[in-house]
Length: 329
Picture 1 (cartoon, rainbow, N blue to C red):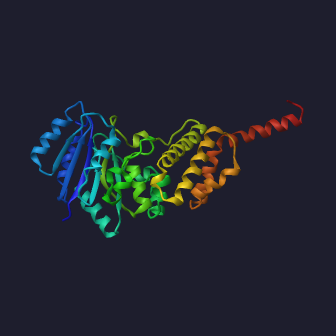
Picture 2 (cartoon, rainbow, N blue to C red; picture 1 turned 60 degrees about the vertical axis):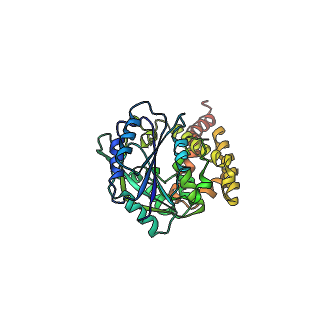
């Protein structure tokens, strides 16, 4: 049985930490090291970790003296990876008993460099909120279509870090993890780099209970599909893509040469859209290049989103023109 490194970053996680640790330590796959880095917790997290360290020799603790933030805390743990395969863990979830075993088998069976799975979204008391995270987030179709394509992560960020298992072969490209944008965090970046240079596979099963609560560092609670105004939809879409490609451009040396130009053109395109409220057909080829493999419906929907302000005003402009012709304005 091959040894795996499990990386767990903690910060003020006393409330749910024991459940997560128990679910990891009681896995059917038993040959692993559990590397835990605490980021200056102010509650009883460190005391809990010390208790568990005494009970299980597989646990190795690191206590930070200065707060790093969760992205850099995970980056620190990545520098401590010694085994060929590692997995990421949040501090407040609960892993299914065979989570490691199933993910590891999928990784090996498909001869992949990274494997991830679906997850069940639960509330604080582990009651089911959404049986499938990827269905809820409308990612399932994209994963099915793009799992062998770098665009799955490049455009849609489908890889969930709390289910991720990866080979360490690309750590030299992954580290350092950019901190340019809140839309590109540790798992986003890991998934992207492996998708660019290796092979990603997906297990269409839920392997963890992904807990949602008020104290989440990151999570689906921070994402909403509901907006009160059409303008909000457009602004969010553009801002997310703008921040995404800004990070890519700032770290362009990591990307293959054939994608570096695409990063820069896409960044300039979404920067232009941030400052303009009308259709710019001249640069539409850039959007087309990014999304040309999508369905016609998706393509048209996104065309509408990017141009909502002008589309929404068309009926009013027509009415204004008619009234003007009639001499009533």
